[in-house]
Image (tube, rainbow, N blue to C red):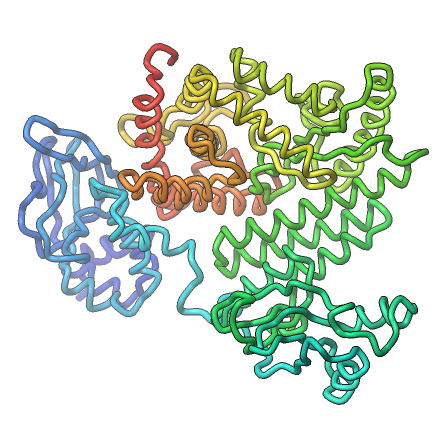
Length: 638
């Protein structure tokens, strides 16, 4: 005879994670052993410091609150409702409970025997991953290093799959070499004999000092620039770019992209100061991956028309989608797509310069601002950019600025056709306000810093995250010097930045519900960008500027650097870095799924598991904002 109660329990459980991952037969066995608990409001399931029970708990109806109790302190950490799992301590360790579980209203709770549950789920990596995340989301100290790596386990490569990108690269061992005193003729004979496209030049200690490729021979010998008997040191490319012997395919690929090379020397310690042991080629990477951003970058650099540039950038979206599906770490994805975006911008500028009636009258630099300036722009979003040109006389200024404004209109027009929308606030280099000489920009930043107001702070959130993607880097270095000199002269600017960074409270309300938009077309939608991503971006910017740290623009890299600079807050900063990467990945997935920026989310479309992950990401936000309030004395400005 069928157990109708067990069937009803099974039908309920299979709708929620992690039970929707359990095989039907095993789920029925679990349901048959469930104990049904009826709780009145205020009834306690377990208390802090109680020994672990032999059950884990699932809410059938009602709500159960988890409280942190310490003397007179009784803080609500979370409120669980229908389908939520709590009391997972016995699955993780046999330590006492760290929180107290009390019915928030009349409730029905299923108690599931731990031993039975473990016997049918121990071999499921997916279930274990979910349970670790759920446990980490409910403990009182969410920043402990013991669980930090486990919390975001699903944002790392899936260890049950063979993700080729993170295998050790298969480089060529015992590469063909020649000495520094060799002639090009003898080196070329070796290349021909061994049918290879490059040869490494080494010193007497077998350390790599240079590389010669077929392209070098074609461009420097065949053209008559050097005789065939010339020493190899005259035409070799030096210094070489090196990597360690345990280099992954992904890191090797990234090194090639960053340095625009097709060969990577593998040495004993990863530097030019140790013995050469191998060489990794672009062909080796392609043979492993089958698809490479290097190919996309080449297409971008060769594009002579906007439609070709757009086609190449659209391929990067396919690569982005593929990387996300393979669970490639978001940090690597960000690096690759950032390289692509910068290359698209640089090529758009090249094409624009060719369309102008004359060459640029003076040197200039193109700045990517905002998310591209932070190297965090994964999807097609709007443009934020500026142009800095060399100082000219007052008489020449108007004509010089007019030239660069026309150039900027061509560039922004091309980027728009590629897929990057125009900035609604017109924060683009085609606006005279954002196209100035280095002297004018220096005065502008001094004014923003030394005489801050709300407008200055609004613009600072865009203009203090910049990256030179084209042109004269010296101009940008000069501007950076001015910024940090001005910052050292005031503390008021930090207060204004801090006030802006804490204006958006934690994305969760008092009862841990998501705070959604209340009016207009966005009503009932959750803005993950303004409520979760930007508070972390703003906090990282303020803290890194206050430390006078240059050249670290990416938000998660800023938090990682802060973790090094502030050992006392190491776990919090690392937690913020993890949260930012996880939120970026979630937002990008939503954007690809719905064909938009991913910043507005309909919570009804999310699973319990997805909501759990999001809640876990929100926990560091309130903590980092509290630190800002204290450190920058924001009470009088908030």
